[in-house]
Length: 84
Image 1 (cartoon, rainbow, N blue to C red):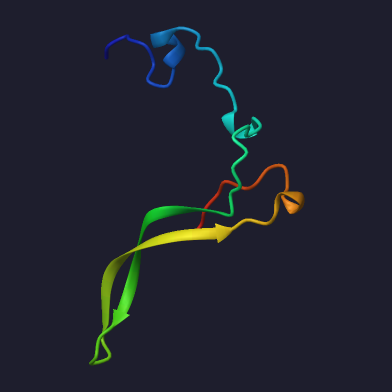
Image 2: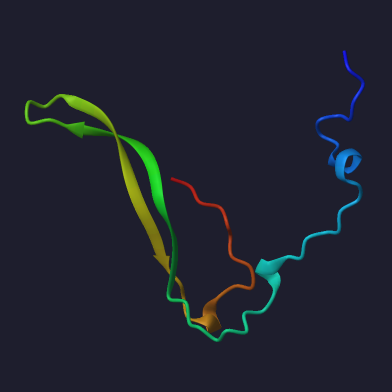
């Protein structure tokens, strides 16, 4: 077995990297109102009922969005987890 850098040790390959800034936590200075957020192109398996009553498996593509409350009601950090 070869004695090289371990797969999960990027510091051995690239040296010490500077930490990335948390862009999500920085204030938005563009002053653009955002009324909704979402994701596009979510593929999910579905069952479609045929005219004869049989279930036909397929894959559907969804665009999902949610309306945001006014800024005065918003929490400082929103969850960034999506679940289907």
